[in-house]
Image (cartoon, rainbow over all chains, first blue to last red; front, side, top):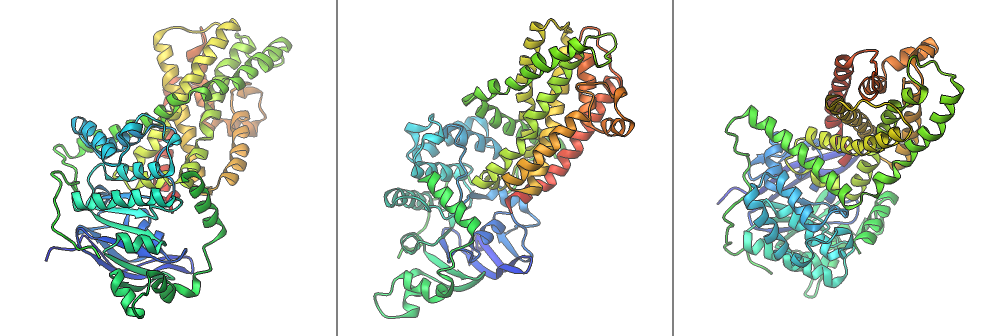
Length: 267
Length: 283
C-alpha cells in the first residue's frame, strides 16, 4: 500500500493552559475526502492551521506526502492548498487578478499560467465574471474563486476550513459539486472541517468527530451511525452523542463576531 | 457512501521542491520576484480605486499653504539661506510619506481578520518577500505624494532642483522612507493585533516621530534632549537627504551617503524583524 497522504501522530497544541488539540492521531489515504467535525472550539481550525504550517505544534508530528510540517514547511507549502474559514479572496481585485497573483506566487510559468487561470475559472463556473471585482461577487462565487485560487498549483492535499459557512443551500450544493469534481478529476486528497452534518454525510468518505481537542470518534458516516444506534440514526445523533456536552457552548464572543461578520460578507 | 475509485491523475502535480538550477542565485531571484508580485498586488488594488491618492493630497496641501505661508511671513525659525517655505517643503514630503506608511498596519490587521494573511502564509512565498512587497507598495504610494508636493511647490514658487539625478535620488529616498515606516507599522500590527489598539498606538507614534525630526524646524533650535532623539529618528535622515536633493542649491547636514545608509540599514533590520513576526499574525 502506498504511503498515506496525510499522517499525524499525537499532534498537540497548547495555548497557555488550554489544550486546543490533544494528541491527535490520524491517517488519511490519497484521494479521500475527509471531514473534521465538532462544535465550535473543538480544535478543528487549530488542527488545520498546524497542518497548513501556519501554527507550529506544541508536540507530536505530522507529515504531508511524507514531508514533515515543521522541518519541511517549505516543501509542504508547495504541496497543499488552503481555503481559510474567513473570506480570503481580495475584494478590491478582479477574479482573474486574484488567481493570476497566486499563479505567480506558486511559480507557475507564464505560458502555462494563463491557461491554468482560465481553466480554473472555467472549472469553477466563473469564466463570465473573471474581470469583475470580487467585491461584486455573490458569496457562493467568492467561495468557488477561493477554491480555484487554492487549487491553481494542483496541490496534493486541499484544506477547506468550513467551506460552506454562511452560504445558502443552493450555493452550498454548488460548492459541494465542485469539490467532488476536483477529487474525481484530479484525485486530490481533501480535508475539510464542518459542523454541518449534512455536508459531512454528503461529501466525506470518512469523518472524525473532535471534542475538546481530542478525537472522539472516527469512521465512515454509516459506520458512525451504526455505532451508536438503530436504523434511522443520523449524523446529527452521532454528533450529539460524542460532542453533546458542549454543543450549546458555541464559541467565544470574538469567534462569534468573526463568524457573523464573515457570514454577512460572504452571504 | 462513495467509494474510492481509481482516479485520473492530472498531468502536472505540485512539486515539493522548486527546481533550482543555480541554488543560491535562484533563491535570490525568487525572493525578488515574489517581492515584486506582492507589490504588484497592492498597486493593482490602487489602480482599481485611485481616489485615495487624491484625498491623501489634502493634508500636505494644508501644511504647505497654511502653516508654511504663515511661518514664512513671521520669520520665526532660522533657516539660513533658504526661505521657510523652501526649508519646509522637503519636510512635508517626508511627513506625507510617514503618514501614508504608518497606517499600513491597519491593512494588515484588516487582512488578518479576513483570512487573507493566512492564505498568503500557507503559500511557499518567503516571509521577507511578503513584508518587503508591502513596504515597496507603500513606496509607490509615496511617489504619488511626491508628485503632488512638487506641483504645490511650483505653485508656491519654491526653487526646485530639476536635475534628473536629483529627482532619481528623491524617488529612492521617498521609497526607502516609506518602506521603513510601513514595516515599522507592520511590526506594531503584528504585536497588537487589533484595530482599536493599533489606532491608539499609531496616533501616539506618528506625532513624536514628526516633531522630533528636522521636518519643520532645524535640529539646532531644539533643546538638547530632543536633539538626541531627533538624531536617532530615521525621519531626520530622510528629510536631510530630501532637503539636499529637492531644493535648488539644497544642502545636506549628513550627506547623501550617510542618509542613504541609515535608511537602508534601518529598513533592512525592520524587514528582518517584520518577517519573523509576520507569521504570528495568523495565530
